[in-house]
Length: 380
Image (cartoon, rainbow, N blue to C red; front, side):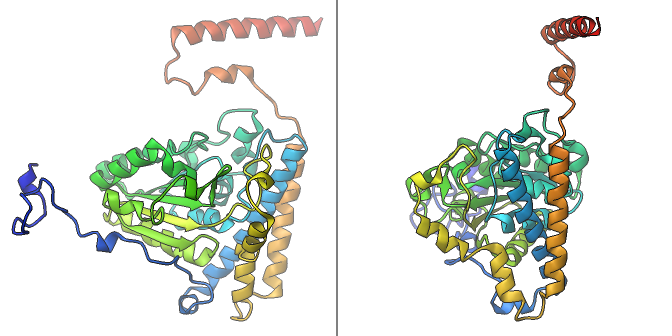
């Protein structure tokens, strides 16, 4: 490809072919001026009631999952838990928008999305329990390990999506990030490569207002995070991240667009983290209670109840069934996490290299000998 191959028409005054002129009309890539909403709008009446009920059920179960995981952390059963309380609409919609052959690339705050995809809660929380590796089989579940480093999962998603397209697979990768992740170099590299390669990947940024304690205004001067998409040559979408129906609509559209060869999309979901960053954080040091209260009034579950009951989509029976399912999940989590895990120290050496290095073989043999000696002493 040379500069003469650029799509820019050579007839535009003042520009030499290809070198400096805009090559793509940015207008179609720009996000909406205000976040997309479905609940309480005309679009709600056109949305499948069964889908709305399923989203509500998943929200209720997801909220209880967050509450129980937070409690387990306070009881010392989890080392840490970054709750997604308040952000459940993003989590459940992301899982529901994907097909079985697709891949999810979650961050450390996205265990609810992993569970909503069908991964067992005990396995999804294993990493945060600190008792073993990822806890679930990424290949079998088509769900990458929870990424603690910010945004490093984004280029992984692009690589997998590009490889799938080269192989002729109808696979889409969905990478989940926080607003803090958009300040990382990995974010830039991932979006740049995704657009250049036209990779079937969707980037979902959950903008909850803070990168731990740093407000968004101190980390980005962009009109919105969705506007960053234009710089890479992909569409940007701005959506109400607490409107589960809107989230599902935007995500499904982006996923199927990618599957059809339309390339990547950047989605910014405006949402809010109701809880502290983790159990090691004191959120009262950097935000006012009035701000939290305002977002509680825009809670994802509250929004659905407010708009689905008058429409006859939500009734007492569904509310009861969802609550019972949520309590059953919480009870199972309590029972399973109160049992001590069976640990295998030798697993330290697995899943590191396809073929163990000489140094690891030596260390593995040394540990095996020490464990055998301890067992012999205990047996006396």
